[in-house]
Image (cartoon, rainbow, N blue to C red; front, side, top):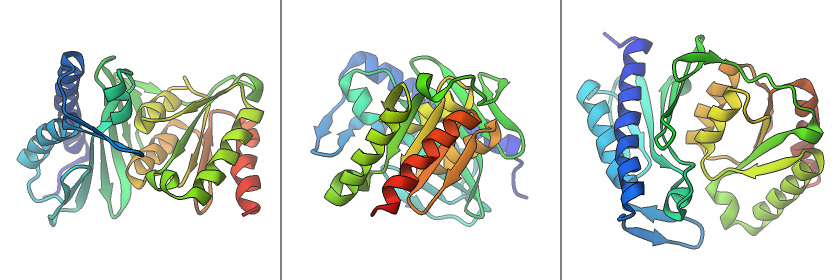
Length: 261
């Protein structure tokens, strides 16, 4: 018998909090091994968190397929697939910036049905569940905001491949300038799951994604749908906002930029 979403949720929360508590201790100790690359950072904190998270999930659902950022794909034949991000925001973590999280997304038939994000330094817990909305520390939230475009803070997200391809990097720069021309502040996301949580509870006003990495984007689009963000997407982009005015201002940015390429 396949587990209920409530059972999956309990395990996902436990996995994220176990991994997150490890990250909190490692962050404060400052004793991780780190490899700083031109376009990425590798940290022993990623591996340490992932080992603890996988131990929790595999102990409950050993037959479920699982895809983890560090160790890759673990085969299984269960109906649900787990996506595990043991440290979303490694650059932030190793730079001493407190915006990082552990995250789990559960898929059924390739579609996200559950997303959990835990921000360990703040002890913020976000849970999004298909048909049940998004909860922040146990309380239901929605993404509606009162901001006008001129007062809006908007997150931007790019995938790892954008930094590696000059043409895509140039497109990203044009998108960034377009966002900045239409809103008060553009917040560049080095930890997308943290910002998806803030969007879901209406603390950020919008988001523009260009070629985002699938793992974080699947969780983000679940949060967007369940919290009531207005959204639109194209082949390489996604836009979400907490009201009509901000949405209309933002959605023209990737359309204008990508139509010219």
